[in-house]
Image 1: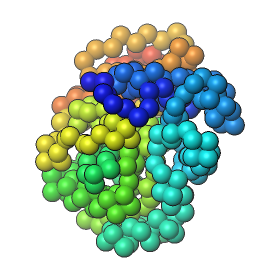
Image 2 (image 1 turned 30 degrees about the vertical axis):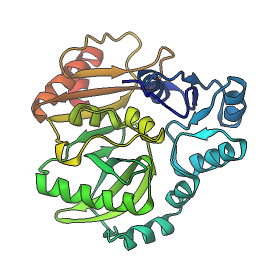
Image 3 (image 1 turned 90 degrees about the vertical axis):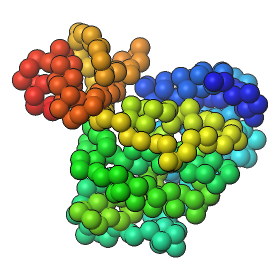
Image 4 (image 1 turned 90 degrees about the horizontal axis):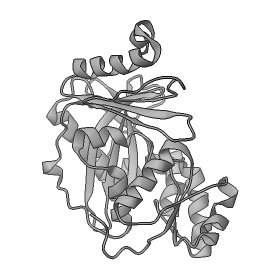
Length: 299
């Protein structure tokens, strides 16, 4: 559903490839008129002004990059569609962020922690509501959700810890929090500005688009979803990869390929009710592209 009274209508979307394409799609769904950035980082502000844009979305990127961009937007009166500069600077400073999370009551990971790194996206609005989504494991160019052996109780505990940290900082928008999890022990690692590129997992498992929700809360809308109604349905895996130029993608149930006309890296999302169903579907896609042996190796 389009936004009725958005404070911005024509955002420039930074970045290239699938990441920027997905953000532009979210803008169009909301009735906005996104403009694709053509140049590099140094020309973004000039491009936005020349195109008559009233906002700039930073795309995917680390906190240091986004903080610098947010500050340039602030000086020139251009709305920045991301976290506030002070929060981005805090994310970029490991000591500051760890101190904030300690004060919020979160356990901290230590340098010698040897568990798995678990990431979770969270949405927050200006009214203090926070929504945590599916926890995921990221290994190289692949990510999977939810965690193997994750109970409802552990999911809620992890999510409530993450939400507590986000609420303390007064976040508005989309962020990712990462924890180190080893058995029953967990500790905060860091916080990153969203989007990070793994949001398709939440689309499949939770049934909402974090990119659309990010734009809505940045426009001042409240989060209408309630945490008690958020449930994780099934299993999903996401790969960042470059399909073969002569490969055929036939699609099918539980399979989605996000890519751009310019080629380059694509994102393959596969989901199903059970892990073995996801694996069979992914194997079929890989076998179509590279043959049976390579398909088995990639899984």
